[in-house]
Length: 225
Length: 280
Image (tube, rainbow over all chains, first blue to last red; front, side):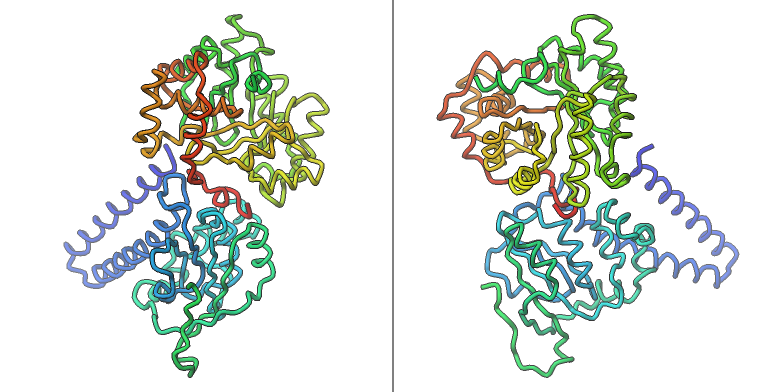
């Protein structure tokens, strides 16, 4: 049985067991069981929503993906940067709340081939990541990277982003804070600079701050123009 | 003319690949190998990750028993996968021996590094070169490389005999081919028909050439590879298709037509290198 079929098989069995338990709870009139099951179901659906959101984006990099040769590859923290892009520019975004710069670099190492020759990498760095890697990053990693960086733990839990990163998951779906300030700076990671230079890619590093944290007046950059 | 210098084995220069989407059932693969050999295709490409080494080895063994070809007539190529490079930090000797055992062979005509993982490429190439000196491997090479990788290998005195890249009219890889020709490196093309992408299938230019030469679009594209000095590696589960694609040596494209096909280039990639080879 192929891996995909195995996963579907396990998923279907889980659904059947869940349904049976729900029927049992209702037939017994046990409010605690029913509400527990309802909450679990809700959590499961939300997890599936978050996971699918990341997975669908990651699937673009497989051989059956249709997005190729884009002008911009945008990696980093969630923010509304689209108004900064030149009109008609093609792009792909790999963003998540609170992504670390190290995770952004590792994602860049895995995804830069989607850019056209001499395309542009945009790193959006929030600088406030509590964890170096999260379930939002590992889906973009090759198995040899997972082994090299000892990320086997995340490789298992990448399917459960809501369990491992509940607040980030909620943020990702419901609160994409648009009120940010964007300050273009020199990238603090020499590795990223060298990496882009060797591959003749243009690098734009942007420090992203919540507007509420800074009392700066309208200083949004138009760096892409 | 150039074809003669790039011919591998005693076949016509074409390769049958046994990639991930190819036939894995013994009877069907035996049929494909048999038909291929009858049509003059004596070169076969596999890799551990394709999981076809055993079945392809058995099919080749069966064809050798029939006596229509000898081992020397055939050209058999496998690869070293990324996980193997990582597992032993480039010391891939035991994996190559394992592949030989699986395919019941004494030697490989070529072994290629499947992905140029930066951390392990140099060590792997050194080890493969040692195996070449021992006679276990006749040629060594690297797949999925760009011009900068080839330059780096030349600088490090690790010149490969062969490179294998994704190449088709939508991705002509001119820079790589140019540097390979300068350094006598054989270029093989995988996905030579770009999985018959609709941009090729419905291309007016290719359709017109198809009528002009009385050949299918697939045949025109394969001939374009040959006429530009590149060995196409194609995969098919259909015997008819193998016969069709082997029937490309009774015509050649004019220089104008070669240039017209090359002008379709848009650097389209089916396989994103960095996705399958982190740090590419």
